[in-house]
Length: 247
Image (cartoon, rainbow, N blue to C red; front, side, top):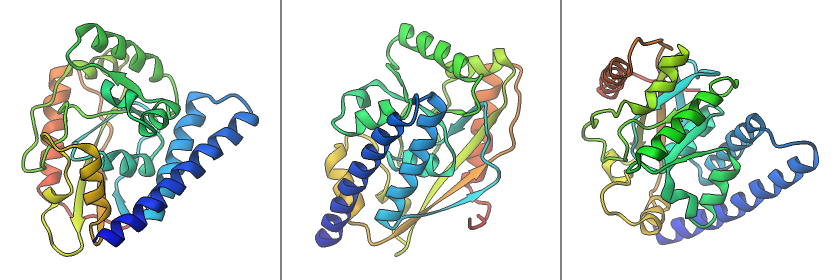
């Protein structure tokens, strides 16, 4: 396990460096628009999954615009969802100060939110509203935190508001992890008081796993609470088990 984790850690470090150097070359070829940043993030996420030997499968059609909401199990969700489609994430403000990963998040166009601050939520809502005009969806995790996957927390409705006002489509994305040896999904989830680096080392040592992403049909909702409740019900139902189609 330790040798596997070390080998993957080295592969991760080299791939991250390669992706950042590619971003530098992109700067020389023209302005780094938000759309170009999102497509770079997708390209980079796919490179990282390939380097780590992580497979993913997609069911449904990833949207090209609007808002996407997903359940949240781990930082791995970012890689999986980024690989499935270009998008802008809404992430907790603490990530902005993380070494390496914070810089990558900023470069990819991530919107940072302090969930304890009403002013921050209002600012982020305004930024989401602006980005709804682009041909790249905005993705956030309405649970507000990652969990062990045993249940789906109640969805916060505030960040749905920009999509409601713009009558923009909202699409669900349901993430599920399958470990090759039959170990429960919970072993990959990052939740509670787990420190990031020790958990990352543990995840890198897992013998093998894959991820399933199921996209629902885009829907326009009349009210943010309705949107929160209905997308929650949809993701919960999907988590309880429809078969996936390999991509």
